[in-house]
Amino acid sequence: MSLVIAALVLVGVLCSLDLLLTVGVIKRLREHTELLSRKGDQPSLATGEEVGPFAVTSVDGEAVSDRAIDTETVVAFFSTTCGPCKEKLPKFVEYARSVPGGRARVIATVIGEGDEVAPMVAALRPVARVTTEDASGVMGEAFKVMAYPVVLKVNRTTDGRLLVMADQVDVDRPAVASV
Image 1 (cartoon, rainbow, N blue to C red):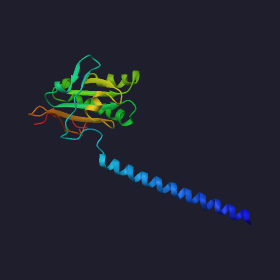
Image 2 (tube, one colour; image 1 turned 90 degrees about the horizontal axis):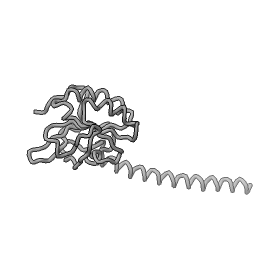
Image 3 (cartoon, rainbow, N blue to C red; image 1 turned 135 degrees about the vertical axis):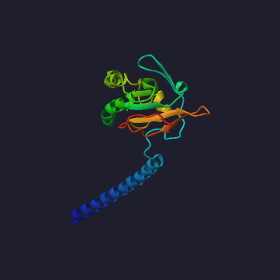
Image 4 (cartoon, rainbow, N blue to C red; image 1 turned 180 degrees about the vertical axis):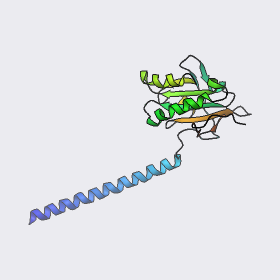
């Protein structure tokens, strides 16, 4: 009989410990949910936000910087480890072909390392100035990119600031110049 009582007490203690841990996990999940809801679903800078400074060199040796952008420019970010990026890439290439001003008005950044960036770079090179970097690179920092793929339109304002003009560019439609 004492063995049954000891087993029952042990089960009670284990259930109480489990309940205590579950309450702690729920509290932590609520904190994380609150933090995530403050950030929202925005994977990068939103429309109207100012782009940070950047100066990089494209894979073709061209200088690419925030100071060189003086008219509407499409800026895209793709990651080699991102499934949706691989799906969106062909649509983006078609979209970039229709951008007024051509390749000079399109910047594409491929996030990845070594030879894994080569297929994306090859696809983007004819239609965009292509840069490559790791996830904490200069371009990603300037545009505050948190997820991939991202396609933005940026332009310089009359007071000289570089702002995001559109943060959800529809690549399924041909590009048209803003009026």
